[in-house]
Image 1 (cartoon, one colour):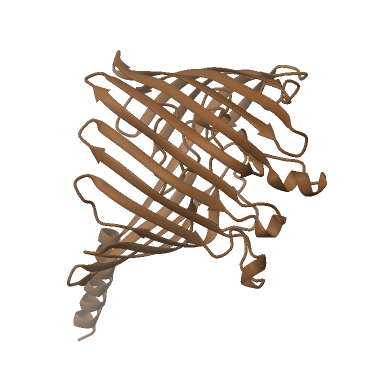
Image 2 (image 1 turned 90 degrees about the horizontal axis):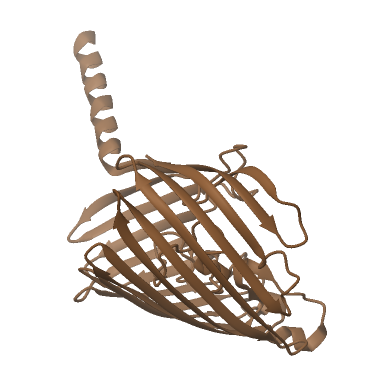
Length: 354
């Protein structure tokens, strides 16, 4: 009798493990590099850096089939610094994504924390138009010219079913950092975008708004379009963005907040990017140029930023890749002395996924 009970218990345990294994996945990225960089008015530095091609992370995701076309899923993803083991954001157990999803024939509804439409982070971003994306450094990638959004808390996301290669995504954050005040004082995020992908063609267009209520500033409006077209071994990318009343410059640089009413208008900016990717020698060579110009409303000062970056990515296997990158950026007028926009970088790294 005892033998039968033990066998039944072991069998049940095996069944439970098998069920969990088939529905829950552990995944992650390990990325590290050696970098040489020089910023204006600073000494050149040689350093170990990480998360250059892709941010270091580990995560769990899973789904449960409820029948009749319905399923429930989740994503829990935490970032970390490989060289020190430090967490990505202090106090957040899953700082990259924390989502509960419900999927059916009418689309997907999600709740939690994720990246905005133009963030190039996570499940629901639809940013296109760049070969280097927001990877590598801002002296060559699109984040050095575009004002991209961030990850936000308290999100509600809807993504439509695919229609002929196109999907529509709508986002709303009830409080980008917290929503514990009355609604009128929480900072909210809104996003609406169309994404199209079919064969070698990709295109996206999006509108995003940050109402900046917690900053007592005018609402930031971002209009972004981008696309890519493949021609055999060659892929061409291009994108454009108009930003109005942004409280951030590109590269996620905060504007001064102590200049009275005028500073509440932030900056107005136009940005452009164009790039190519070419399959050669078993890997992909990428070359990208970026340009932005704008005005800071508090002082009516103008600025412009330009940068160029190139990278070569070689996959040793399906999960391991080595890469090299070189970038140079320069800014003028209001930003001519800024170390953030006047720099060059060389890096060599390795990226491994599991």
